[in-house]
Image (cartoon, rainbow, N blue to C red; front, side, top):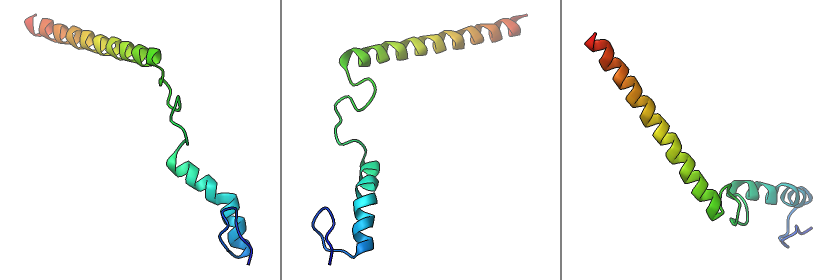
Length: 78
């Protein structure tokens, strides 16, 4: 009986299937084999920039919320 890449005895179809799709399926399910810089922003400077950007966005949202609140209060006061 033929053996696949790992040395397991399988039928011809099984050998072809596991040699062709086995590794692809496994890799696609578990993600990258290495995690160093696998995710955008893995470097310290990029993480710091991301934090600054997030804080800027939160500040903008707070300012907009406050602006809308003042506008509603002004409407009620008129």
